[in-house]
Image 1 (cartoon, rainbow, N blue to C red):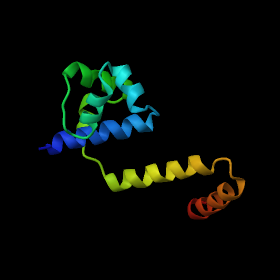
Image 2: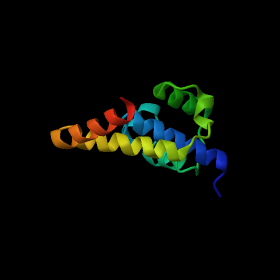
Image 3: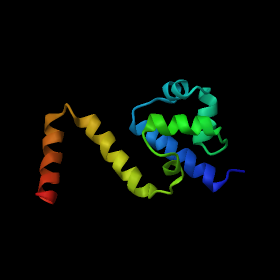
Length: 108
C-alpha cells in the first residue's frame, strides 16, 4: 500500500524532473539509480536513501524538504498543459498570434 507521503514525494519529483527536461532514463543515470527504481519512487511505491534524496534535490535545484510539499495539482496540471500547448504551436504563426491576442486582451 502506498503512503500519502511517498505518493506526494514521487509526484513532486516527477513534476520537477519533467519541468527540467529530464527523461526518466537521463535522471536515473544522473542520480545513480536504475530507471525502474526511479519509476517506483515517482509512483509512490519506494523510498530512497538520504544520499539519493540529496542528489535529487541538488539536480532539481530545490531543498530536500520542498520535495515533500503538497501542491495544488490542478494548478500544476493547468500550467503544464499550457506549456505543452505553447511548445506545440511555437512554429504555427496563426495559432501563436491568436493565443497572443487572447493573452494580451486578458493581461493588457
